[in-house]
Image (tube, rainbow, N blue to C red; front, side, top):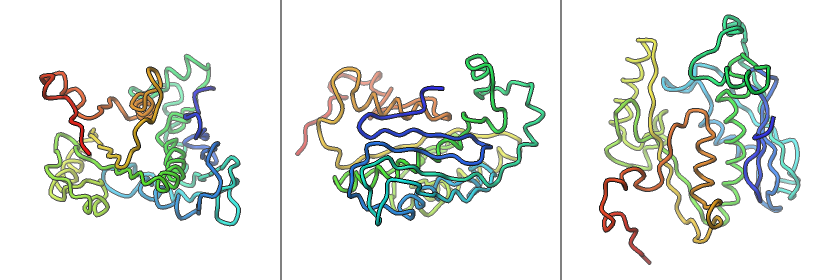
Length: 264
């Protein structure tokens, strides 16, 4: 199976399945001399960890990261970094009834059509558990970006039609939904609970803000920064669309309205 790697100079390869022994990521291209510890990575994994709130998976996982290579005396060596997260809450029995049935909205049919075999246990390789490796790799990338004074903040702006009316960055870490609007977060949680009792689920919108991004990143035409970011985001199973800046609203603007002003 190809398509498990992303990046060129900083290249990550995720591995593992939902109900396998473990999953993780191999990072190639991390420069030497970057201070890195389990705590740096665990902090981000703890935010991703399932079972934390009403809007997350009920699966209980500690998601404890183990650094297997690429670190010596608390600093990166420039060699490949291998990170592993063991699966602990693994019960494959509920999936036995789906052994011979394709589930809608899953990768079941396409995996079988492409490879002639599929891991039906929790989605196998196509499970959202795969994103644990991405988060671990992202935590390492953030250590490099911190050195370059680049700051990245992500937060939930909408769930089930309820939208954040204000953005208070200090509020993001105060609720399980990572919403910057306290009142909106409470309304979202209430909506999730109502829909959950009906045996259904909700979708939402996440916003990512990058500060300090240096000019000139990316390459002309096919490797534009926006194109690479969009590819990475769209490869996450739950993502159905990506907007950069005003996104599709640009189609409803005059040209004079959507020009980016040049600032200092």
